[in-house]
Length: 496
Image (cartoon, rainbow, N blue to C red; front, side, top):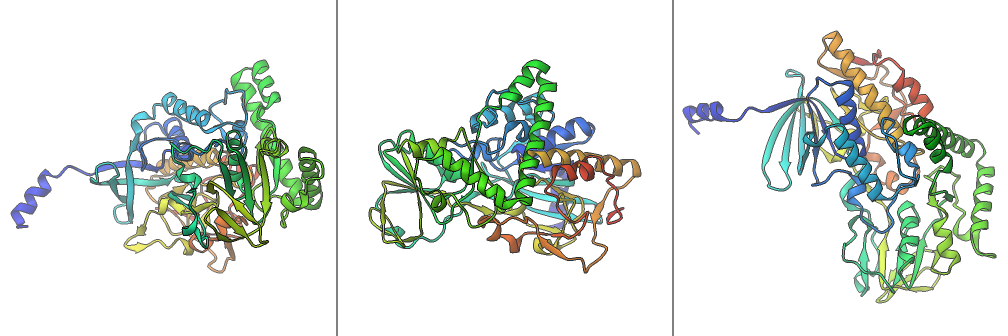
């Protein structure tokens, strides 16, 4: 290109759009962040980029039968928007309706840009801004945006693929194999023998839902999971809303359930043997007389070392008791033409195999980031207050709790983020960057959780420190003090 042509191109090229904040992801976290920016920082420009064609994140992506929350919606819902349905444990369509209402009520429709996938984000200290390269997933068009802050609300797993281990002999199997993350709309399981491989939240959701129409459903697990029945409807919360009104009743029900969640988790941490006995007793009461509870429902780890699975109204136990479903604890030796051969020598025949074997963890949407030309290596960073990364300026992220309702933390950190923006504006700062004062500070995994999908990815994730503000809290009560009421300024958060 000649000098004159280049100059002409420079004059006619559209200016690059600049935003104060760019939110990545239009799921429950990104929508919440958008609402807090709208109300707490009304003069700030922002957009929400969503790679898919719909909002809702997890609740739109997953279409498998029975998909539901495993936390009550009085705590999984937003603090600012009452949950008005009678069901406290809600299914995906109800949650999607709630999220769409939130978008409409807060005027976020025009803020969300669908089919916008971030391919790269680079920070320039000289310009005090991020440059973000975006690809339109629907047209292939390449775009460039700049922003003062990048706020990542993508969750922590890959949307394009779930995790499926290598199964010997899978190519010999003549039936149908599906992963719940990519459930076909036209899949018919009525009258068929279904084998669900897995024992986590997805498996325990699928089994009772499939059992309503299947000939029989078998849940095949290598290791049992702690499973507890919970009421689908919270009658106390519904009464509070009727007596006190939607706003006050919801706020009180939310407080009640936060306290209840904390009490259960704390009890399990302090008295794991007693908690194990109680869970076993509850399970045994729900299962058929003489059922091998210890074989199928007694994990080798303590309660809440991994997430405890909730089953609304004990639907999994009901399906087992009715003879429509069963549980097998064993390992797969190989697939056969008609099903799977187990290490015990038993063969399970199935017309349909569902690999509910977990997720692939992907931090921050897998977006390649760089700071002044140097790639950000996540494993070399440390989380600051559970919402920023050491050495990465003007970057925040939303990761919720693993031992409680995800959204509880999202609300606190979004409020804290808005207060941080206001503080920087008052002080005339454009940049803030967390920096560790003590390079010898001990660190540990970012998500201190024993689940398999976390262990597989832990080496590629950031770390957390052994003290505040570098320790990522898993306690809502602690975060209320540090994020909700705590100062945004910190000796290890540098402003310029």
